[in-house]
Length: 239
Length: 335
Image (cartoon, rainbow over all chains, first blue to last red; front, side, top):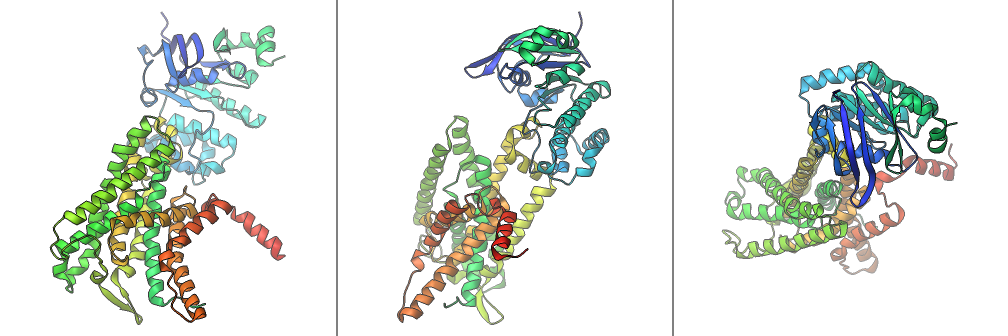
């Protein structure tokens, strides 16, 4: 039996009385990009939040590297190697870039923190030039890079990104997608990418989920979904 | 217009400085618990009461000796600790459990009012019942006679009035360094701005809030300790008057910035007595008979609240200074 990085079965989730995700089952293998696409309000973000412990799981299970983490609170999931990057408010706007990075290394001891900050700044040199700027003065793209850097400092194995390219100009968005591919190819991370921009996300994804009204309507290779004219036209606005 | 005397100006600066610390504390707790703490004024009076008790029990016998000056260090320190703990208890036993049960801002606000009533009554009882070594009874005593006199450049004033502004500046600088240079201080700012993101990074947001409440109470204690020498008498009910000025200063500061709170608090605390006395002296001179309006002093704070909320609800720190300067330039025909 193949051991998956993440194995989700029969997941039902939502917020309080609002049941949003129905019976979701899928697997993510190591060093794979799983792209989650679907129309607005189809439950993509809620699925991510449920996986990270920010939405309520009613039933089903989440297995991470062989252990059942279904009911773990977010800070425990963060400690064991999962990372979740919210769509907005994912950096401290009033803090400087340096302070944001220090906060990302909050739980590490000083030497360890210094090494990892050094490491992350070498992956994203643009941040080195902005260390003393407040995060709110960064451009949208730079802000997402800072958020990615903050995530990487904790050396997660599985990174969940919630619409990272939303509100970014097309060129900047393309650049950010390249950085997401770099997460897999160079930094050996596993990625779950929820995206509104279906084509770009499917092009880089290994596997894809199409969510429609809280249910998984397609699970399989990303390339195949991209070529599926019927599904693409109906749900993703692809020609 | 008859301007206030240098003595009165020094008094106003001291009062403004203590109010700056009080506004700083109120703003700090407002930013963390998102609720205005109506007991903040009484927390300051608790600091005053601690100073009164220290003088009654220990310091009256050293009056006039060099050792007496240690009261200006010991009393604020003791007040810092005890009032800090009181504020922490208020947060842990009342506000946090209520917030956890989903009580909204209005409910929490009323809970702080209830705590204020309890604190005032407990303090009143304590000051009535506690045996007094020197005063006979503690309630309503004035400490003005216990403030060491000092003369600077021919201006006769008191020690607490000279020290208070320096203490306020020193505490503000210390707090600034704490918030910008230490990891825990940065975590405090981070938790205030975005608690859920802070939690996902492993920051103990609860601990951060507890420290904020302790600090806010502690600063109120220090402030109240110095105020005890300035106010007419130490009465527990005085807190409900001071709270008006504290809110005025905090609202002027914008309620979202501790630096704004310092500036707003100082401005209100300094201008309130200065404006009142200037008006009183001017009216006296104009009418040719003594006019006394100092008992209406708080009206100034109430006016500040109304004017700020109407014209600039974001307070001083929320103003668009570039816009204002630009407009002023256009109106003035400059540039």
